[in-house]
Structures are given as structure tokens and as C-alpha cells.
Length: 345
Length: 264
Image 1 (cartoon, rainbow over the protein chains, first blue to last red):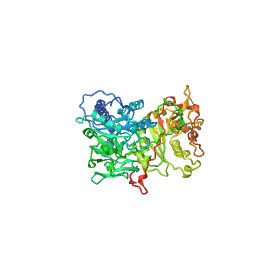
Image 2 (cartoon, rainbow over the protein chains, first blue to last red):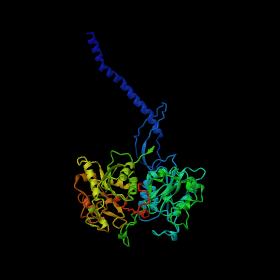
Image 3 (cartoon, rainbow over the protein chains, first blue to last red):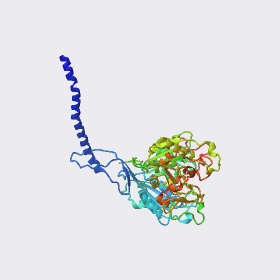
Image 4 (cartoon, chains in turn green, yellow):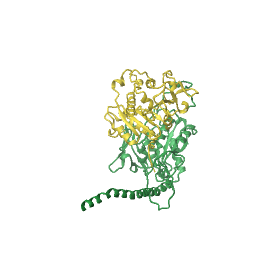
């Protein structure tokens, strides 16, 4: 009987004990949760950066809560907040990529710049230098640049009419875009002091090419001049630098004139801003440049073959395509024009 | 702060289902790349990519996985007979039709008519150019919304004619303005609800005259006076029917110069 009594005494308290444990533990867990949150939230509120007016703040991945600053000890917390803004927030640590784009008026211009801007809007610390081939900066470009929200500089210089390339004629005079790219180089040299310049990379991006987002991260680490393959140039699927086992460029995988000093397309290299500022006389040659030698005319004044830094997995990946856009057929506009010329395309 | 793309999904914003037919050719990856770069800015976008191929290719699969977009990857091959078929004038080849219809079929399979999601369907070819503003214009479509498109019909742009009362009353085109819907594929969007309500509305595959493909679908969905004009009563151009040149690959020669394992 004693055993029975002992057994029942042991069994009964089970439910009571559980209840007791719950009633004791629960308030403590609640207390700890609240205490934890109230120490963390003020830290986040204090660190939240607005990122400037020029950004479109569509949505933050975090609910904003109001908390009073507690006078407890501050706990070091690193919390990743996923934020979409257009463009991304400026960073103090990333080198700036200065993208130089020459452009000229023609029906597809706005379309080209729109889709290029849509790509550039994903790249942090990007500065777009758009140089119009025109007598004056046009309202179309002025409005477009302002509406994108990008960090930009708007320049213009008109290529003298005798020298403009007409259509696809390979005229060995001033290739298209040269004066505009040179103006951008001059602007960079006038704007940035070579002694206390912020780190930067210069990239020449024509307005009809196609750029992957990965490309911009590849070029960001350029020390002098970096290079990579380009699709749809030289009559090939792609042209690429030849890279040896030691990771050094020693030649060019091209069919067209592989013995050029730099058998590479404009879209296939980037230059460290410091180098641009140091070699302040290095420009693209204006006249007397053979077809395909424009890039060499600049690069030979900046770097030697062995100094080149291969990117894109030692030049085995395609991250940029030299696409070209067809000229639209406007035959139904007729002589006097059918559509409203005030409607901008 | 880590930059996230696309923007976080919202429970309250209507979804934009973008149906893009695509096919293998040298510039395909470039086209899809820059298209993805545009879509990555648009909130609540679901990309339905439909390959014209017997199997889903690695190129497109990998691209979609890497991009980070919300997507569905489909494929259906256009039979060779259709490609050359009834009208063998290249401009009348019904390219993309089977693929767009498959996209519609997937939507009807995935969503029920009794509880339709808030959203629109938009047919976006992979070589056109889209402004970000366009997607916000189409997002709140009740039945079918329309707007101008650049570089179609041999004009700077084609556009619906909108009356002062804000109703579509005709089409500002030179080519066959009397078509029931003289509008390009890129010039309209349809609410999901309507697609689900009319499960038999599809693009007609055969016997479609040049320029009538859009009509073959829209006539079963809406009448002209039911159209909703967007883009400031159809006075702004927010989409361009750009076309990409075929690249010259003459230096590849007979046996190929570049490494075929390097994806372009």
C-alpha cells in the first residue's frame, strides 16, 4: 500500500509540475524577447541612411518601428538589410566606375539610352559621362538623364562634318565617337586631381552594346588596364585576349589583324583613373588611324601587353556583346511626315 | 546595406506576367540579358520565358537562375511546316505564336477563374526596348489597356486614336488602319481576370494575314470602346520595337575559329 501511495504521489504532480514550469518560464522568455528587441532596434534606427534624394526608394525589406533609445550598453550587431533603390546606395569603399558613352541623334537614340540606363541603374558607384555629338546639349538627353536618377555628367562636342563617318563606309578619318571620348578624358583630367583623386575606373561603353551586370564588378578591381573578351566583333562569335598559364596576356585571339598592339574592341578594356590622370597626354588619335587601331592609339600610351590584367575568368567568359541595332523603316512617314513630330521617340 | 534586385515582392501590388517567346540564335543571350536588366527594376514581375525548342536549353535555364527574377521557363517547338507553311513570305511567319499561346495556357492552368490573381499579361518580345514607366502604366488594367509603340508600321510610332472623352475610337497607322485592332504585340496588356474568363481566346495560328495576329486574340476579349488608353491618353512613347542586326560571323570560317564551348 505504501508503494501504491508513493506511486500515485509521484504520478499526480506531473501535470502540476508542467504547469508550474510553464508559468515560471513563460514570463522570462517574454521578458528576454522584449529586452533583446529593444536593445537592437535603436541601433538600426540610428544607422539607417537615407542615401540621398536622387534615389528612388521603392521598398525597404524591413519594417520601420519606432523605439526609444535605451540607456543599456550598446551591443555590436551587424544586420544585413536588403534594400532596392534605383540606383543602389553610394558606397564609401567601392571605386567609382566612370562610364563614357558617346551618343548621337537618330531615331533609336532614346531607346538605346533607355535600355542602357536600365542596366547602369543596377551598378553601385557608377558615374555616367554621356557625350553628345552635337552643337548643343539636346533637351531629349537632358530630360532622359535627369529622369533616370543616375549620377551623370552631360557633355557635348560636334564632330566636324567632313570627317563624320557616313553609314557603314570605312572612311579612314576620324572614327565615330573619338572626339566625344577624348572630351570625356579631358573632363576627367580637369575634374580630378591626380594627387588626391578618389579611386576610379574608366570604361568606354557605346550606346548600342549589351553589358552584363557582372562585367562592372570585374572591372572594378582594375589596377592599370584590365581586358576581357567581347562578342560579335572582328567577324567572330567573340574576340579574346590570349592568356598564358601564369595569367598574363601574351597575344590576341582574333582573325582580323591579330598583330595589332592591342587587338581589342573599345568595349573590351577598362583603365584605372589614376593612370588616365598620370598620362595626361594620352588620347585617342584623331586622324590617320587605320581601321581597328583606335583602341591601340590610346592604350599604347598607357600600358604594355604584360601589364594587362585579364578578367572574366582569365578571359574565358563573355560578359559584353557588341550588338548593333537595325535602322527602323520609316517609309510610311512619307514626305511631310505622318506622326506628330512633337511626340518624342 | 545589400542592394537587392528585383525589388521585394509586395502583397498588394498587381502582378505583371510578361510572356516572352525566344529562340536560339547568336544574339539570344545578349537580348535576354539586357531584357532581364530592365525587368529587375519592376516590382511584382513574373517572367514567363517560352523557348521555341524541343527542350529547355541550358543557356536560358542558367540565365534565368542567375538573374534572380521570378520566372517560369517553358518550351514548345514550332513545327517546321508551320515555320515555312502557308504564307512563306518571311514577314508573315507567325513567329512566337505557339509560344505565346503556351504562356496563356500555363496561366490558365496555374490560376483559377474563381479566385483570379490581381494582374496583367504582357507580351514582350526579346528584342524590343521597354521603359520602366511602361510597366507602371499597365499594372492597373481592368480589361485591356493600350498605348503607342515606336518603329512599327513603317512609322516613327503607331498609336491608338483617343477621343476627348478618353475612349479609343480608331488607329493612327498608315498600314491597314481598318484592322479591328491595328496595334503591335507590344502595345497592349490584358488583365489576368479576362484571360481566365475567356479560356478559349488564343492567337490564331494559321491563315492569319500579316498584321492581324494581335486582332486574332483581342477580338475574343474586348471591343474597341472597352479599351483603356494609357501613356497620357496615348501621347507618350514608352516602348520601342527595336530590332537587332544579325552579327557577321564570316571569320569563323568553315570549321569555326572560336571555342564553341564558350557561351555567347
